[in-house]
Amino acid sequence: RVVSLCAGTVAAPAKTETAEAAAAAAAAMATELEELVDFLSSPSPPVQKAAVEIVRDLTGSEEGVTTLSKYAKTLLLSLSKLLSGNKEVAEPAAQALINLSLNSDLAAKMVGLGLIRTAMDVLYKPESSITRLLVMLLVNLTQLDAGISALLQTEDEKMQGLFVMKLVRSFTRSSSENKDDPFDHVGSILVNISKKEAGRKMLLDPKRGLLKQILRQFDTTSPLRKKGVSGTIRNCCFEAENQLQDLLLISEFLWPALLLPVAGKKVYSEQGTSKMPLELSSALSIEREPVDDPEIRIEALESIYLITLQEAGLRAFWSVNGPRILQVGYEEEEEPKVMEAYERVGSLLVHGTPTEEEHSGETSK
Image (cartoon, rainbow, N blue to C red):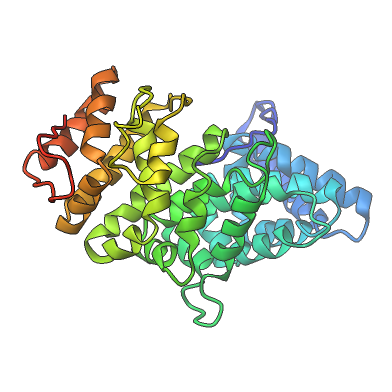
């Protein structure tokens, strides 16, 4: 997920009639831009404010970004310093950095200049007024492998995982019912870092307990937050072959997050839930809001598939009556791509043998 803030565009300069005039105009413009970038470090607050607003507006167009990129190092360092200033300069500076980070070369330069650490330091200052913007910047920077490594702090053994732990804590402690929650975008950061093995291992580490905290956010009403949780679980399930036990240790949170989105609307009777653990049976015994986003349903089914590829995962799935739940959900499903995902899981289940505890004759689709 890439976050974009197009704050505005700047009109192109009028065409000159001669090559000499064009060259002169270009030179003048270059001088003006160089001065503009220098003004970002001006000791005069009004000059600094005017400069950062102009830069922010320039980053709203591709042409502006290309022009500014010629002064990348000075520009990025100056903007990063403004992040810890008062809101009237910190906000446009953050908006400019978000727009510039859409350019992968500039994003890589930001990571190299330590923007991940700067963003995290400012984010957790009590007086910070740009929380949402800083989180959005981190979303963009963790599109890059180098950005993920910087956020995971893989080079610093003593501090490794501290940034991620802080973000997960903020994600799970902030109000998911607040429509303007600045930490909603943390879900997108978690999806990004879980695309890499080092990120998945960190989230799955039972001593840290991070995935357990993330899973508890699945009943949120925020679509962005729910999507972040779903994508993170799916990515972590790619470690099922090596870390299945770490996944199953949190099964009381894992199975509801994976099965409820694909369980359909059926309200189960007491008899129908008799073979299910309490966390599933209680949720399936009442009316519930359907998960309308087909992508989330597909991700849940892909996660189940990755778990049931492992023999112990398949046994665990049978033990919670998973095949029966999927059968009911499949019968109600109308989206072709989601149906394909059900069928992919079903192809594993028809070869799976239920244990003695499960009732015989169960089928799945």
